[in-house]
Length: 260
Ligand code: NAD
Figure 1 (cartoon, rainbow, N blue to C red):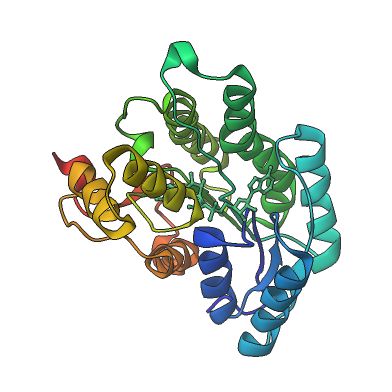
Figure 2: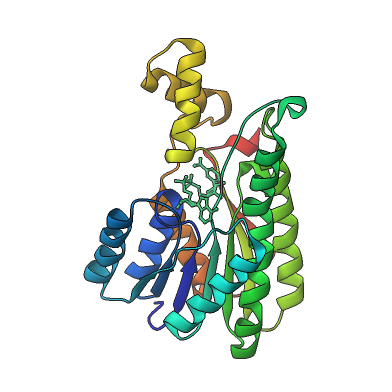
């Protein structure tokens, strides 16, 4: 379905981004992966995508907390793949603290990566997409793009910002073959959440699996984690012809979190 499409997924060396990259590749797209991690492991991940799905997979290292580097990264990706059809703005980080205790450097880093990198990446990708009159921008927001939780000021502010930016991008590209949508996951058991489970286990003096159940119980009525692959399949849908009139919208996959 996505054969000959060229996709860039930020923060795709692990977690949700990696699952999205693999689902896009499974459907035939060439892929640029990006993110931090052990060099050998990243190379194994990249090579596995090529071997399993018969597509091109390129790894490009870039710290997307810096705007200039983010724009340069997109141009490098365009050169490496020979174009860009799909941009998944996925890279994200978390930090939890009360507003009055929130370290300023954590606030700045979260806003830079979770919000500003979406702006810079989109700004660099759009001229290519508008010119070819086809493009898909998918922003990985969160249940926290719709509702708040205490101790997550920077993350909630950034994700609400991403929801607004998604709508502006949709309006500025409407009727030009380009769509922009968000995906709003609830709890997904990745490294980002594992750290929060560990913190809860420590706070409550419980074991990790008990803490995982407590974490779910607090927010997610299904009491089950969303899987990275389910989010990958949602991203594939947003790239399909069936979704060509879906823009400025969001897909919520949160086990009922935002329904109450
Ligand atoms: P993760 O920690 O598993 O993956 C984050 C990815 O971003 C990694 O590849 C990491 O190397 C990369 N990254 C981190 N800092 C970077 C930087 N400065 N420049 C470039 N890449 C960087 O986390 P995840 O849970 O897979 O999160 C992916 C996205 O999904 C994030 O935007 C997150 O906010 C969002 N999300 C996650 C959950 C969840 O429950 N896990 C829920 C809702 C939304």
